[in-house]
Length: 465
Image (cartoon, rainbow, N blue to C red; front, side, top):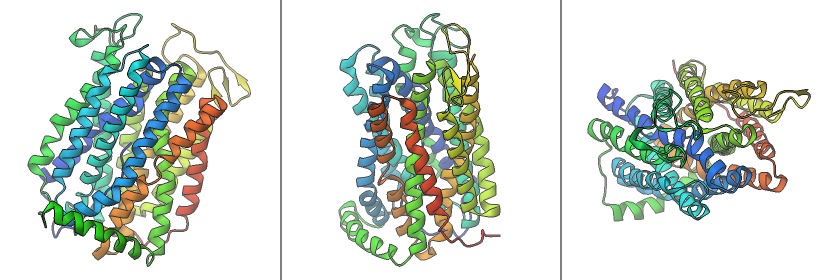
């Protein structure tokens, strides 16, 4: 799951060339495998079920690591955003944080099943890669208003999320079809032996998610640097640091004069916390509750990316047609209902009342009714997540004064990350305290509801014609 944008330049006098937009959109394609393969559907469940001592402890440790990365990003967001706003250029920041993404992802290869001595290295690498992926995405997002005018922001934002989902799904198909093998059969989901002689018993296919993510980013981020124009440099880094740090106080003071935007930023902070935690822990939850292997979780991820792609495209058009706020509220409603329904199902029951068969080894993919219901609910979540994030960044464009949009995008990045550690942290604490993965997800319901109620207090202008 990606984050929000930092400071931006004034909207373009005319739309950017198609090559420039293509380069910008392909960044989402390049970065999404980190969120799909590592953070959600392949590596995170592998860590919880095979590297950690048990799934409950694994979910808690992964949640705490997500919290640590979120705390670091929250602390650095306003500082780096102000410096980048003063210096002007974005690509050097994308390159620098891209290096962290590549290095952290590559180090994940060294996490081995049944090797507790590798846990610390894996968690460190995950935090490093998370910081790199989130900040690289942040600075790429900040280039968006320089490419299209405000009345096309919703469609561009939705297109970026959709292309990202397709990239994530493509990388997931490659993982399941050619790298990840069933430890019992030694074959991938399409009946092949893993490429490069990867050892299924040592779970090398799962571990390959890290190096694949790193290589994928290196290859597909190139068009951004070749074809998408950057904002011209305004001053040197030292001067930009001094100027940027001075501007933070002014930005915060400016916010007090715009209560409507402040309410939106608070709402964004709350519901984004819930979404970040949901995506960070969803795959781990399925592995622990249903005993899903990487192949089953990967297929589940493919379903989410398919529904997410269509959700982002449809949400982008709805954003321009009816406005961002209704799209956000509708997405939160679907996420809340789906999460609540998940809490009512388990490996041997549906809605706490109807007993069903429990998953058994060798019974096939998604053989039980609870597993199939979980698939449907996951598809709904995927369809809602893209519009929620895409419409949130375009809503700020509609709310902020045109001459101060850069300042408010800096605060937007801060609101999306300043408490991003809270959701995973609270979920992890509740999971450990009650020794129940389901209880950990229940925390997220509260965050979605509070975020939606806060957003209803935001007054919006009509969507541009």
